[in-house]
Image (cartoon, rainbow, N blue to C red):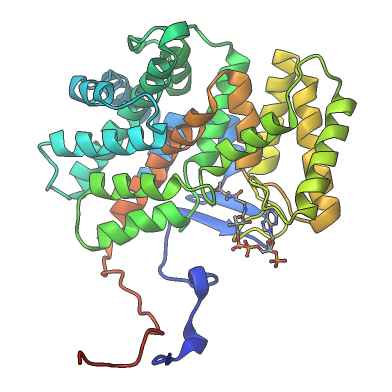
Length: 387
Ligand code: ACO
């Protein structure tokens, strides 16, 4: 084997490599902070709706009242499940992972979009808003069809008197959600909306850099998000909770003790624990305190102290053993469980939110495009010839 390139230059996983500018968000691992267009994400989560945050990420400024009203009208008009997408989903086995369903739906929506080949900013903004409006119906319908025994297979028609987050929960469960639940869910959506050049966003930018279309970029990004090292971790967190065992009658302290025992054994076996660690943040994920507060509200609302016990036990053991902090997927997993989503729906919820960030990056990439095409160092056989 030969090394034909300067292998000193190899940055495995592109770790530490700065590949471009972005004005959309700033992740600062030193201060554990995250800004969307200059605003701390904590402030946005506390004071803004998901619709306002989407507008901010796409346009660079928060909407005026008139702009927000116009955007809300557009979003509410695009909420119904596309009948062709419904037919395609109905053809898929109920065992299909919901991320595969989301990916397929994004692709079908692209193929049905008569503006597919128009990548002007105005058209891409319209496509992004349409996808943002459409994805909750896909996620909600797919969860319902997988539980047709208990929830009925028919999609629930959207309600135009509800905001984005409340309507999402309405379409998933067919019940008007409590304000506490809507708020916690909306906070999770805002926190998931954008995170600079993460793996799925970078995927969207790579696809866009070839001058492919917005739906192709989103479809590819969904594929990247599916993996457990990225978005799939929120599902894996809940699988860990289930493996430890969830007993709603258990006290916080008992659940915490069992979780600590589980973590100690898992770390002794050198297992990688999902929901912990981050490529960029080494001292804690900037979004976790805000999402943990939202989870605390849900735990209080549903009266489930044992969930907090499991959460605290795993977090404390990991911190003591390795000093590794939770990432955003750690509190969102149990939050989505408490709200009533089934585990395979967790990462699609991330999709519905991150569509905003992905599409903002698609538009930014096109503003100053350069084909993304790195080099590799060859380490295969030396040149050889057929006998
Ligand atoms: N559990 C146990 N050990 C861990 C974990 C973890 N979750 N995360 C990192 N480590 C350890 C590694 O074993 C490694 O130890 P070593 O040096 O003794 O071998 C060291 O910390 C560095 O870990 P890497 O995986 O090399 O760090 P990297 O920056 O490449 O990985 C990643 C970051 C992929 C997120 C990693 O922490 C991980 O796999 N976490 C679990 C998956 C997860 O939660 N992903 C969600 C990411 S955030 C998001 O998408 C919202």
